[in-house]
Image (cartoon, rainbow, N blue to C red; front, side, top):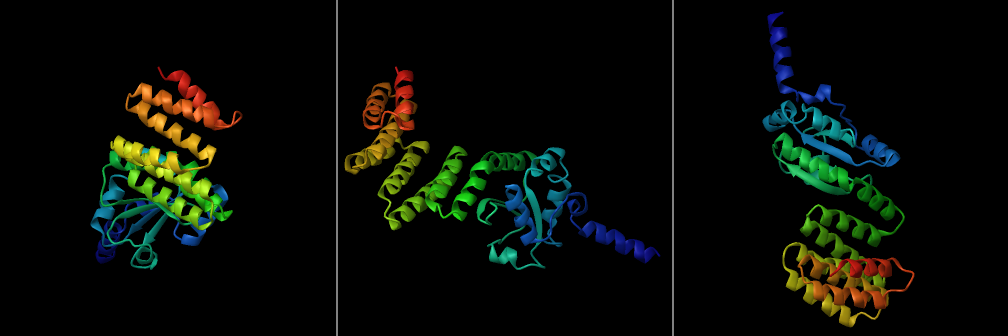
Length: 272
């Protein structure tokens, strides 16, 4: 009897403490089927029974009421890397690793190693804020609109300050648009790519690239968008005179009934 109790005690210590208390899905296909039906992201916990840091995360982070509440927004899936090849196929090289996927199984966020409750909550908050855009992007890809999807994801990353990731998405959008011979979308994606350097503090580089684009594009809509972008960068840099000039050019180029025309007019009115 004593040996049975000891065995049960050992098993309880070995099992991740959150495995029983947290509603983890165990099947990959089931989790993503639910995600598609409910328009949600999938949070995947890659773990192993021998992983001590995984057990630490279960006792601390996943036991936190705020984390549990945040994860209710996701379909949650736990993958034992010793029992499933999915971790290897998804390039999981360290444990614990947590990955958030869109409903179409595309990786969007990754966190590796042990984290504090506060750090983990911050990561989840960013994913939650981006969820509508990422779910919509998955739908766009399913409808054969990958360029719009990449731009949408790039914008979501940019808002979170994930500039390198945003840049990759904009470059992907530009490449696909060029392959489709869609020059307008290619140049629009290029403008977004160019603007990322200003977000990192290199305003001069962004402005130089955007001004070169403005000189060579022949599409008035793209030109208006480029000058709007230049104006926003100049305004953020407190260069009010240059911002007004750029917004004025955008106003002249944009069709009178367009969103760009309205945005340029508002921007011009707000710039001193």
